[in-house]
Image 1 (cartoon, helix red, strand yellow):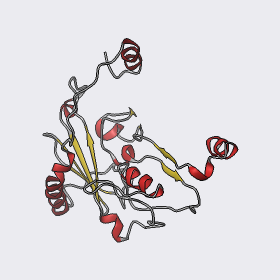
Image 2 (cartoon, rainbow, N blue to C red):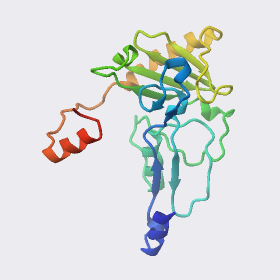
Image 3 (cartoon, rainbow, N blue to C red):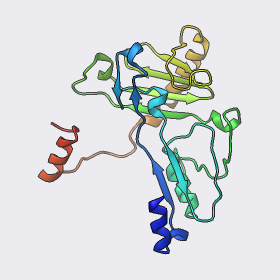
Image 4 (tube, rainbow, N blue to C red):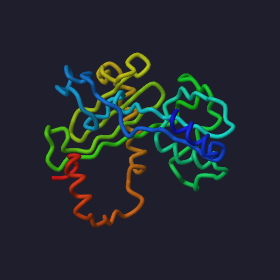
Length: 213
């Protein structure tokens, strides 16, 4: 509210797009019983850890609510459309403009939402030594983590993704496992990461945040 008020005071409100988004959700004890995991984020791909706020404010646009699962990748195409541009061909991002009040039962929900968690060089637990990938499609979430047993969650009945139904819904498990396999190439990096040197000040800041040692 303060940000938008300041934009109004500066006369910039009618030429500014504001996007509010988080990089991850949080775990507040939901996985304690199943995984011995209490309060943190980023180590699992549970549905409640993938849920983030996504709010877009743009000049001249009425409020819209998208009820279908979407990806933070969609911020790219959405912002471009609000600025009168189109996303490049072949991008994984889709614009959310015009998806007002799309419900979970409508066809838009069939668009897959992919997520990936990196592996840890010094994993605090064995399952974190492998990449983990998640596919959300229709009401299902499929999670595959290296050598760990795959997991399946019915998000209609279990929105937080806490009750694994892989044994009960084995046919859906195998279908989504195959689907994730076909979509696996989308996780491949498209650009070479050559890295960049860090100065001492940035190294110190990252170390204080716990990202380096």
